Image (cartoon, rainbow, N blue to C red; front, side, top):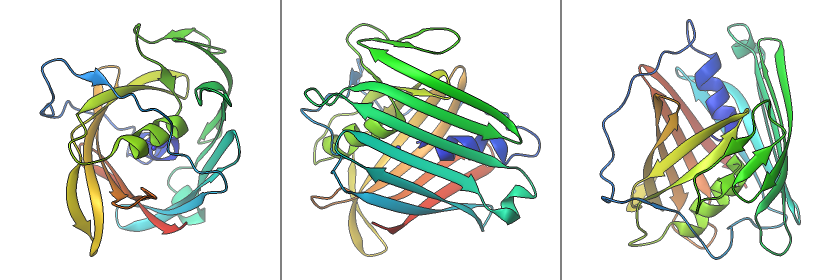
Length: 239
């Protein structure tokens, strides 16, 4: 979900040349921000979604996500027009433990301009193995994929939900997502929760804004990512 991966792929691949990101102003967060913790992930078996992804005012591809009993799959690839500038493809599969709904395994395939990275990742508590360098999150936190992070945010979003953060494994890197308290708003006359956030990748920062439908489904209606002058939007077109 924020880069869902396909959006982070685009921020990385559509620049002219590669994007150089600058720090953005800090969000208003509690003095001691807390990790987002929910009783269960908001991921509904049988649910599927499709987003239209736009960059610089043109549609560059579609992203798709499908949820099975204990597995979530997503894929994105740039279309023919966008591929004339830069080609990006991303496929992610997340396997959840049936009892705890924690991530136990993920396969992550990322292709940027013909260079492909394939990762098989095993999740053990605060550790993620299968990368060239094992990843560790700080004690008291769990590592997420983009899929499980989306499930946490959809479950967390409600009136008065506190700001917080998550750690996400993407393309072999550990990134931190900080989110502000949800704000009630309208998106094209539809009641929605607007959530502002920041994705921290090493010393770089990407601004994130996510709109979830303000109903029981908590559908990701729109996702926006910004860094410097680059801006990517994903609009939900089918669910």
